[in-house]
Length: 364
Image 1 (cartoon, rainbow, N blue to C red):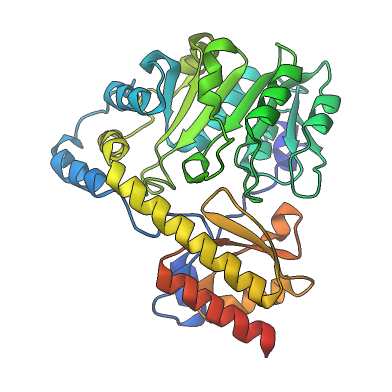
Image 2 (tube, rainbow, N blue to C red; image 1 turned 180 degrees about the horizontal axis):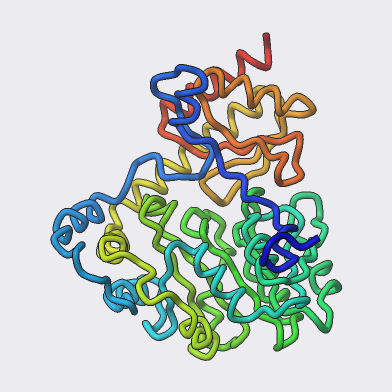
């Protein structure tokens, strides 16, 4: 039954389940300094150049921000090797997802997403009255043939996270090209590359390299993870101008704050911080892999800054025990992966603390 004056499909939208905060765990368990390894945030903090920009431009907070984020988009274009007119900036890539859905979906249109992926694709699609189809995966890998076979006359959008969250698996250049080539021209392919800076695989290709020759692709990028700006919310949609035009029509006029714009532009230039972030991530992943192997735990080799590890039928209990010890990871039941936890790479001592606690819990 319809409630109040909201559209009937609103009641069917699942609520987004975020990772638990440090403050929540500190209150619940009386732990002074919890370790958060649940939300794929940057453990090094924010880009120092971004922080300097915030200080430098704080005097501007009484004025409205640039509605087109020109300086930020210009810097992003230099970074991602495209033109500023091919970029729309958003209040995090989440806002770009929302805007894409609002611009391109009508009620009863169909949106396709893989079975295990970022849950906000579904939420944003459902909020526009779309019918969301979850495509089964090959184990934990995206099944491009299943996606192709699922596309129908009402399909408007296909969401692909590359690398995928929460599995950490990626589509290589050949598989991505194959997927795009099999999708009809009236279907928009949204390639979410939130984790692409962390990829070590040689055969990965960014969808940005494909946009000039393909008018049905839009690539999402965020500075939340790689540049440590999760709290400021800076994201981009990159596509041909014809794709972005309807999105610009509905974009809020001042959707990115002045400080976020200045910090984002500075962070994109902070190559030293990015290299430090990647070095910490890759070292941390290798350490976690070694430790999981010693414990005989299955895990998914990752091209991101997190790793999905199979604990088994007691995964929820292990997750709760870790919380009691002040270590926050992500229990994956909300993704349909009841036997898994997802662990974000932390600082070296945080990774060690997590593994020490995990070993104690599993061997007691």
